[in-house]
Length: 222
Image (cartoon, rainbow, N blue to C red; front, side, top):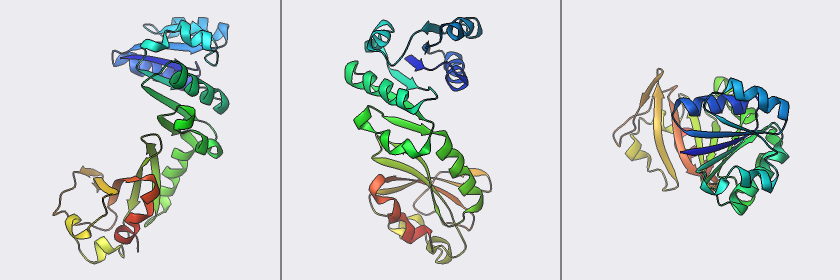
């Protein structure tokens, strides 16, 4: 798979090294020439280009029309949005993944800006903090499908209907907009089945439509 990464900071270089280890064809665009020169020796197997990924000419030189995935991984949200938009609208890249640096900008990272998947480090860290202290609350993990779907987690309290009433997954009668995709119990992942019962402290991972996140509340939150 051909992947172009915009941004030669710690995030971009880490992704590049991981993708090379997975035998992908990786090009990394770094705006600062001195940094790009240094990265060439640090990233064997990666095609490092000294180029501004916010410029059409740079993306054309990287042959974006033949690329499978673009990852906008700079430390500037405005740059990542521009890179995402150009990649999708001007070059038709099938999948564009964009890094969010400031959680307040998360609402911008959608299909209107060419973003297929957004990754917010601040939001992820916040979710992990919430997960540690919040039982019986909906924790958003990730947006999917251009923001139309959402991956969420609920840690079940003893008074959650699914626990208190000892209901199976089938008996919960979840709406079509909600699907249980995994349950983590005592640090062990479990594949959900129709006859599964839920226990206190289960971590239930669900995928829902973005506009239907609260529809799981009646089953998993008291």
